Structures are given as structure tokens and as C-alpha cells.
Image (tube, rainbow, N blue to C red; front, side, top):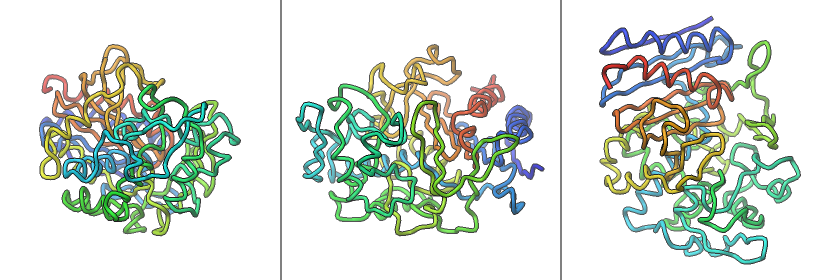
Length: 394
């Protein structure tokens, strides 16, 4: 069932544990297909595509397969924001009403506190996500807010208007909650530049870095992976409009796989991009090595610093949040071999990635199977296999 290609550089024996993890996940039908890349000290240590990009049509996974990125969009759009901040086009620490005067969500007491771009990018704004509400009748759902992965048919401006009608969960800067903040940041960038978000990202990030396959829709639809959701006895194809909760007791994400083919869908900075594993690895390695040619190292340092103290994802003890991704503050608390200061995040269509700057290590794992590829056992198994394979060289 498995179609694969793999390449190992020194040490050749290091690929065995990684191959075994991928093979087991596919053989156990936890994953339909995957692309895994490992870079160590600026050299490609591992590259493999495995399984099916489209199981029903027997289309093998390839390393140049396109994936719906979901929240892998966040570090890309955040990098664009940092480039514009470095140019003085936006400021991370002044109220976003400077560019979006009508974006003034209120607290329960009716006051409208200032929200900064830094708070949006680090999920300290007080905003939330529709899919994280306890049921389908929560405030975001009642306001008709889009999480950027459904076929809403609305514009970014209209989505921001709807978001602003929902009360904030806490005063900006006084809490942490995963949110639509990067979608709002996309609106800030549009207002500050007078350009569409897709143009901004192309001009500041994907164009300069040669990320030719990454955009807000599939540039080559025939290369797009079919998305699957874990099921028994095997994953099933994600249906148009299917709702799949990523965690217990939440309303769940409304999926529109067709959105990736719709060039007219609004550019969701937090969830709307399409791209390849190679393109993301290119960005991660540029950031890990200091940001050239698009960013000064001081701006990368801001992204990679924990902005949230001991606050962060409830299911990830020891992790705080930087700008665009989580940052490890206490490896012991979460039982990980990653060094303090490591970065990671994922994407709801089945992706995970991490960067360990102290060990000069970057890993990208794109799969077409949710949620195993984002938060299942595969993620931890792959992490441990990478560190095990490199034991003695890190």
C-alpha cells in the first residue's frame, strides 16, 4: 500500500527510526500519506514522501505535493507582519485602530480596550475562535464568524466586522487564548499597505524566498492532496462542510476542502494558505539562521521570544507563545527532548513542525490526515525518532 521515496545524508543509519515511525503510522492506517523533511545544521538529513496523496485514485504522495496548510499559514503571515514592522509600515505596539478604526470589540462591561498587533500575533488579544466554542450556538457562531476554513462566501472586511461584535474574553494582555488574531492582523496589513494580503505575503515572504508553491489557493490543483479524517477501520475523505472537533467539548472546525480551489475566498491569515513542505522548510531555515534576506535578526528574535510568561496552550505544559508559533520555556514540564527556546506549531489538516535553534534542527511533517498528523501519537513518535536518530551528533 505504501509508495515512498527517501533520501538520507550522513549518517545513513540515522534514517531507520524515522522510516519506522512513518511506516507504522501508515500501516496502522493512522495516516494516509505524509511528507517528512529534516534539516540539521543547514544540511538536508532526511527527505521522504510516503503513502497516498489520494488513496481512492491511487495517486502516490510526492515531496512536491500541495497541502491545505490551515494554521501553518500563521508563521508565514506573521513573518510578513514582521517584515512590514521592520520597514516601519506597521508598529507592533500601537492600537490597531490606527489602521482599522472600526475594529473595537468590547469587554463584558462595555469598554473597548486597545488591542495591539503584538497581542494579535501572540494570542493575547482576548479574541477567540468559533471552533473552540463549547457548542454551535456560541457568540462567534451567532455572529456568523468564519474561522477561515469554511466556505463562508464573505470578505475579510466583513469577517472582521463580525468578529468585532463579539465580546472579548479578557482584557488584551491579561490572558492567552488561541484566536482569530492573525486573521485580524491580515486586515491590519491590508489597511496599512493598501494591498491585498496575498500580494503582501508574496511581496514580503514567499516571493523573496522562492516559495513558489505557497499562496492562498492551490496554484496547481492536480498536485493537491486529498484530505482525510481518522476513522475506523480507516480514515475517510473529509466531506465538504463536515464538522470535526479537534478536542473534546468544542464545537469543531467546519471544513471546506473546496476552499483551496477558490481564488475568490478571502485570504485568511490564520488558516487559508496552500503550500508544500519544502516551502515551509525554506522559511523555517531562514528564520532559524537569523532572517536574511527578508528580516534582521532582531525581528526574528522577537518572534522566537516567549511573550506570554507561564500562559500558553492548556494541553501543552511548558510551552508559551511567541509571535506566530509556540515557544518552549520548560522542557521538563512537557517531557520533550527539544531544547528550551524551541518553536513549534501545526495545522488542522494534519501537519506539525518544529525548530530547535540550540541544536540547529528543523523538522517539517505534512500529512493529509487529521488529526493524527497534527496532534496524534505520530507527532511525538516522529519527534522522538528524529532525536534518537541524531543522538551523538547534536
